Length: 214
Image (cartoon, rainbow, N blue to C red; front, top):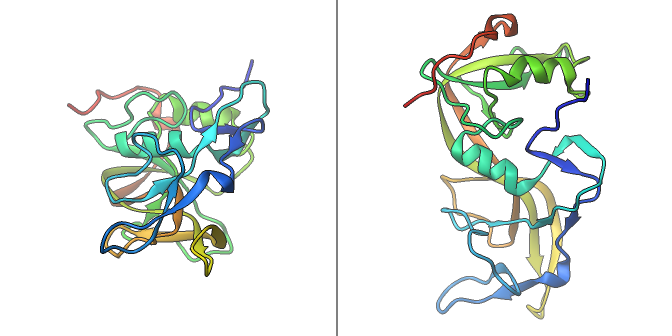
């Protein structure tokens, strides 16, 4: 049986943007910020963060451990299932997967935020059974979440050189909270949600697919 290809998974053939695609925009009476030479609609989110571009090239190997930035953002903003891209929100809550490693302190269910998009009830057991990244991982925990709120993004922060003519990568995998001023030189690649009303779920109880939330 072929392994389902998650909607958010990146491909080894995907092509990232080039640093030559970037420029420095200096708004009137504003701070210089990162931009693309040829901007496209929707590449900045509602908080002003610029998102990384990826050119999807078919034929590559599926990277189950990596996500496509645009598809991750789409699933997180719209609460779509990361596998089938259908609505994941249900009347009894939304399902997410997190990890509880034996070497780490017990998971604080009231302090969780995640960059992993949700899953619909049908795709949770499918993922745990077929995904090479999950099927042998005993630390994966299924969570039912009453409410989740977008809380920030992560990506690479660039700094402008002294001549203000190019951007230089300075910090990788930096987190930027929506409650604080954004980094003017950030290229976002992952969106986070803060989870509220969290309970641990037995995956075997998810055979039936509850009614979607209105």
